[in-house]
Length: 74
Image 1 (cartoon, rainbow, N blue to C red):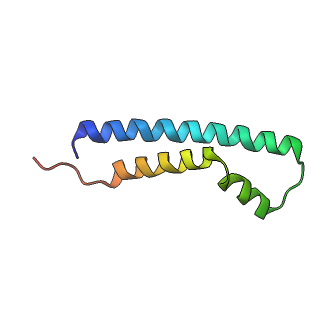
Image 2 (cartoon, rainbow, N blue to C red):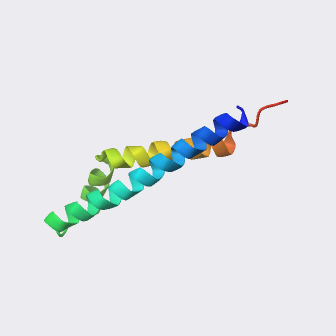
């Protein structure tokens, strides 16, 4: 993979990670406002049921792909 390709994947991964993280925080704050007490199982169900969690996950996977993908050979 070329440097340009790695850079593009890194930028996309960072953007998806930031967007997913911010929206996940907003989703959890909104849920906490409506339901004050919830168990750990409900908390995991809420987190994994949100689109923002998957955005964060895909962003993390892209960042790790760029970090561990072998560099292009000349």
